[in-house]
Image 1: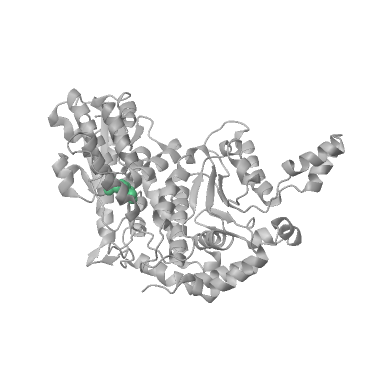
Image 2 (image 1 turned 30 degrees about the horizontal axis):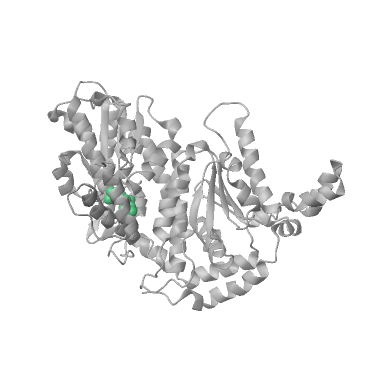
Length: 549
Ligand SMILES: O=P(O)(O)OC[C@H]1O[C@H](O)[C@H](O)[C@@H](O)[C@@H]1O
């Protein structure tokens, strides 16, 4: 079932040899020599255009990358995921976020159950519930319509719905304010509760396991706060749950009639398409939520059916492999030139780094090559005035994904033109750079003396040859956003397949959780301070002395 070592594959070795050659190329020259480069290195699907021409590649590079993808059985692996095979081998689970966006009427049998039927049964309940809340038919205990919705969840039970609600801001119901509390830090809950009227607030407790310490503590605090203002009999009007764990939901005191289920084959970081997306459906309405699912489904169909050479997730994924494994790039930066995508990089951090931050293969052998990159970024143009300096002139090469909508959702004159100009200019500057001769000519025109010119030349020279992808779409709609997220989900899958790692478990988050439980008991005085290292012991003692509780 596991693949042979990646470095042993002839396609990998051919790419190593090719990289030695390709690292001598400069993209400026590649563009000068080839007018057809942009047309050849662009592809379109599900409303997204991917222009990947500003990458350090030639036709041979792509040929070799696709050979590597085939060598790693990408198509068979992809089909196994879509078919519901238990590809999450350390948890013996299928990986079926793609089934969450299958249209009604399709069928997919997993363990004897038609998962599409189950999915649509929950979607129908979500549709009915969201309609009642949005229309005002669902009322708080004082008889008034809901005005504020607070999602309490963390990780995959927070990042997806929060990012999507922000991204679809222009579509949000005018009566509804959306809030997201994730951090166990009481400052988070405190700041949100201070703005709420308990009589018109609806809490969604969202947790796949319904055991996550942060979420349970925050949910308990929210419930106590509510009970200080409203009767216990009204809890059901103000608390609903989203989970796979009905017993724990009932034990918490939420009527399971007010629980929206999902399934163990939905990974937390892939769950925004499930009932975890309830805040999205409430905010923008069920029809828009359906469009969001349809956009992702369109990308699924593309990923399943398009030839590898024209396949957006495959291209994005294999370009990432090229930089990670052959050109030694440790991180990638995400630059959405769209304020409503302000949470997109944070969302991708969990999607990518929790999926591919693995050091062993599915068979438990050392991965043997670098795996998932560090993912970071922020919206443009803000990033330009913060960290783009390092991207232009730092010692590491960081590939950038630019993301831009051609049409804004606002009518403010002039802004969008300046925004897009900056986006395109940054990508051009990364690619072209500025040579020493260009700097000299510029400074001579300013009549600087030759000594000063020579002193400034190294500082003002840009090496260029810095890669970027440009992802462009017409406007940020539910459908486009669905396609965009699915594009990155499948990109992560492509890379996990090449590296032969399990992209769908996350054992790395466990150790800290266990240690925190121990220290929690010690800080609370329920357990004697344990035999930690002297640093941890001293920190515990200091916090106890400060009276932490
Ligand atoms: O939804 P929950 O079960 O509360 O889990 C919330 C999050 O916490 C875990 O520690 C995992 O790292 C995440 O993958 C998950 O999304």
